[in-house]
Length: 532
Image (cartoon, rainbow, N blue to C red):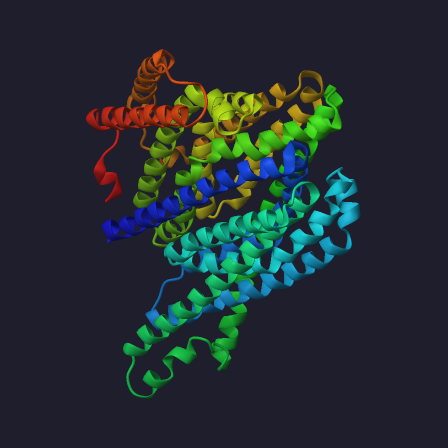
C-alpha cells in the first residue's frame, strides 16, 4: 500500500516537474522578448503590477485551492459517497472563489489610479491594473479545479494547464506585438492582455477536463451499484441536496471548507502583503540610496524579472514535490501514520538540499556568464551570482512549508514566514538606503536561512538525517567538480558570447550533474529505492 502510494506521489512530482521546466523555458524566452520590447524601465513597471495580482490571488484562490486539496485528500470512505463529498467541496470552493474574484475585479478596476499612486507608488501602473483584473475569475476557477485534482493526487490536468496557459499567453503576445509592431506602453498593455488570454484558455481547459472526470466518476460509481441506483448514479453525484441528510452534510462541508480556507487565506494574505511591501519598497529604497527613478525601476526590473526567476528555475522540482506533498501529508496524518510522515520529511529534505547544493555550485561558476550571454546584462549576471547562495535554503524551505501546512500547522508557517519577511523589510527600510542593492541581497540570504532553520527545528522530530551524507559528501564533491571544470572552461578557446558559449556552459553543467549524481550514488547518499 505504501509502495503504491509513494509511486503516485513521485509520478505526480515528475509530471509537474517536467511541465514546470517546459513552462519556465518558454517563460525565459518570453522574458528576453519582453525585455527587448519594453526596455528595462517599462519591464520594472510591468513587474510592479504583480504585487496587486499576488494579494488578490491570495484572497480568491491560494487559500481556497489549498483547502480544497487538503479536505479532498483527507476524505475517506465508500467510493460513491467520497465522490459526492469531493464534488461538494469543489462546489463550495468555486462559489467562494468566484464571489471574491468578481468583487476584487470590480474594486481594482474602479480604484486602479489610487492603488497605483498610493500603494505601488507608481501612477503609470493604473491602465495595466485595469486590464489585469479581468483575469481574476478565470484564475480563481482554475485554482479550485487544480486543488480538486491535487487532492486526488492526479497531477496530469494541472500540469497540462500550466503549458496551455503559457503557450496561449506567449504566442498571443508575440503575434500581437509583431502584427502591430508594438513597443513601449502598447507592448506592455499587450503583455497584460496575454496574461488574461492565457488564464482564460487554461480555465476552459480545466472546466472541460473536470466535466470528463465527473462523468468518469459517475460511471465508476454506477458500475458498483445494482437495481434502480445504477441508472441515476452519475447524475446523483451532482445532486447532493436531494435529502435532508444531504443538506446537513452540505452545511457541514461548507463550514469546514470556508473555515479552513479563511484560516489559510488570512495567513497567506498577511504574507502576500509583506511580499508586496517588499517589492514596492525596493525601487523606493534605491531612490533613497541615490538612484534616479529610471535606474531604480531598471534595477528592480532586472532583479525581479530576470535574476530571481533564473535562480528559481530549478525550484520547479521542489515546488512540484511540495504541491504533491501537502495532500500526501494530510492523508498520512488522517491515517495516523507517523512513519509515512517521517519518510516524506526525510526524503523531501534530502533531495531539496542536494538540488540546492548543485545549483549553488552552477550559479557560482556561471552566474555572471548567464547574465551576459543570455540576457546581455552584466548586472543580471552579478545578481544571479550573488543570489546563488539562496538555493539550498530556498528550495528546502519550500518543501518544509508544504509539510507543515499538510500537518495542519498553518499558523506556524505564517509566523515563520512573517519573521523571515520582516528581516528582508528591515534591510530594505534601514540598510538599502545606505548600502544599495547589495544590502537587499544580503537580507534575502539571512531571511531564507532564518526561515529554513526555524522550520527545521519544528520538523526535527520527523527527520532521520546524516551529517556526512547530507552535508559533507555533497559539499566536497561539488567543490572538487566545480573547481576543476571551471578551470577547464577558462582554458577552452571559446568566444565569451553567442551559441558556442551557451553550448559549452550547458555541456559543463551536464558534466557537473552526472559527476555529482555518480558520487552520491556510489557513496549511497541517494538510492533508487527512494523513488519506488
